[in-house]
Image 1 (cartoon, one colour):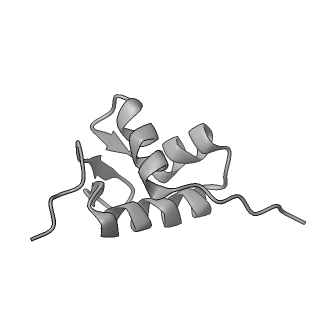
Image 2 (cartoon, one colour; image 1 turned 30 degrees about the vertical axis):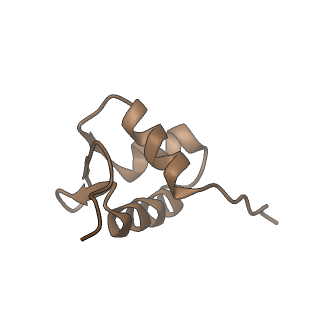
Length: 71
């Protein structure tokens, strides 16, 4: 049985930014976090809703420097 681990989206966003890439894929993130590519895809979608990344293509997300300021 797998163990659940809770990590803040802000922490993951800072990790993605520190990767030094303009674009990140679920595969890239899965290698860094040690999770499945499916879980990494879910994390990237959550980061997208918070404005930390923007979907670029079917497989890649563009890394934003920081979340946009809410209006």
